[in-house]
Image (cartoon, rainbow, N blue to C red):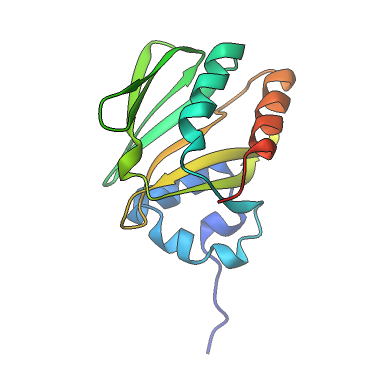
Length: 162
């Protein structure tokens, strides 16, 4: 019997993590996270997502947001200009020249995941639906200032476990 070959995401960078989500919504990846060697993984309270968006907006901390559909991802990055909690548990954020609306009532789990990115280990909030599929990621994409990366990491470390 041949030894089991780890999936590419297990030792992969941030892009490998996003690619793994595109394959099956991240279900296989999430089920194998108990042996993830790429970084930190811990459940976070879903309720903090709106507060995270409010905070990054108030302090001018740029973020990246990716939203997923089957085999598709759309992403934006930049400063959050405005946030709002809309009808029915939705949260809206204007990010750079884009807008994102997340239905937090449909988010059944949130995980803080760290993987290697442009500035080294970088935290991401991954939001999963009722079927365990990742529907959105909030993180830092690409090259940002070291102060931005450090501020994001301090924020991520301060989030309460679920």
